[in-house]
Length: 436
Ligand code: ADP
Image 1 (cartoon, rainbow, N blue to C red):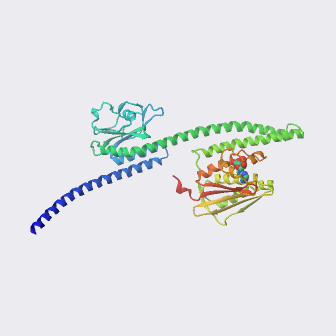
Image 2: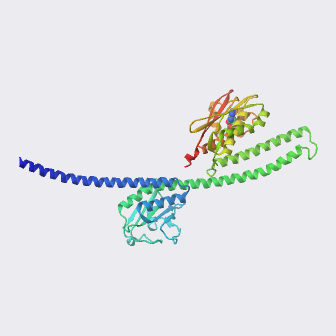
Image 3: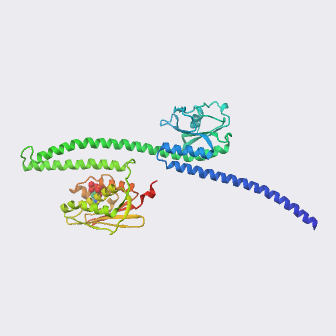
């Protein structure tokens, strides 16, 4: 029995040694896993933060600072492929002296040029032994360097280089793993910031072009208009009724052209990424009251009754008051324009916890179902209204749609041909929460 006990004791001892060994591996694995998870999370946070940056410069600054912090290194630089894909240009760096120039590194030349050409990462433990290296400035404590490519769909868009570990150690494989993790997300953030900048630049050129054209058109149009008015008013001598009729039609068409030109400019402005809504906090009920009151003279002309059913209290929302007035004026104007004689237009509103809904209902000609989606397209007019004498170029609703989109709202239409239509604008009350 004591023997048995002894044996069991030995076995226990043996098991516990094995357990200890396994526990050791387990702990090591756990540490590796935890480290990897920490790096992944940190890389994700850096990439996410960079993708929110306002422009490319800020995006690169967030990346460079984030990498320096995560990897405890003193020098980080990002080089990006130029537009013609001939070489790399140093776009942003930390820890490199001012002596660094922005000269282009051609593909295949130097470390970065080699990475850009091959698409492979490089971990160099002793730079002196590497013929590709040429010192570009900065103060290097060690002869170790780490560079990884920035890739989008296997295409190299740039290179990230890091030097000088704070600990003054040389770089190891695990450092390369960390940098690779960040590089994947960094490339996506950089690409999106670049595309965004290009799109904004295109918008600026387009807007400037349209502004110039509209100015060039409006000036002579105003001159023609004035001349025609003078003749019509008899300032240049008496005119007969036939001449009056023709000139009145000319004046009408000049007005149409002027409206078209300013609508086109307005559309280009609201469509452009550079135009932002000027949001402020205001009482939307009061704003609607004001818009309805301003339509008074038009109502009299058209013999249409304009009603309003509004809540008897203040409802504050964050929006651009001028743009919202423009939306409502336009919708009410349409509701009157496409109405029947002695028709009704009613403006009402209700609210939910997070939104307000503004309805503009008319008893007009209605919109065929197949046209409802298309009326928000530029220049689209329903056949019946295009054939009728109602003025319009089919731009108003596209402008409205853009303004509402920029408010993260929605516009919907309910209509029945011959009976009337209802346009509902839904807007979030507090847009500040969605500023990003
Ligand atoms: P337009 O200057 O032609 O009025 P909009 O973009 O404002 O341009 O409207 C596009 C088209 O949608 C109009 O031409 C018309 O056919 C139709 N539409 C808009 N509002 C109404 C409405 N309240 N009732 C019927 N049709 C409408």
